[in-house]
Image (cartoon, each protein chain N blue to C red):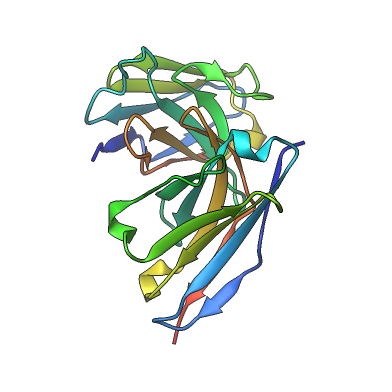
Length: 111
Length: 117
């Protein structure tokens, strides 16, 4: 099984400041079809996870431009250019090159 | 708009079974798959399995093999997940999610299943 490791596990951010979350996989997420099956989700309190970024860097419909994803192979990053109050919650990375698996989550709170 | 509406909360005794439904609307049901994901209290999401709404093919997480069955009813655009021989560590919120190209892009609201004697 692929292990997804996120850092940090928690983050306290001043509104308007940037934030960055790292996700490392134990195996490459680059498929032979040329796609890299790495996703980012945000789970707000009391809600299901919502897709933010798919295949490393593509915005899902309706996701603000302040969210961006980057990386390749086994190392990936989610960046929020200017954190807003509505961005609080737990962020998960997920791989689906094999049977899907999630990172342990990064809790983002506002200072 | 795309909606996945799940059945209500359940309380079950150890050893019992539970069947959770997920009714889809707003998209072509048979053009997508459905994954089921659960989340135990205070834990991260755990993928349970996937079913093709087109042909009923399934793929289950190894740890649940033998206890889980996923089905769909295309006439009612509803997916079902049945988990048997429930244990206390099956207590979790269970989610269905629409799947295309390995992407879980729309999620149901979740169904709390509590296993307690």
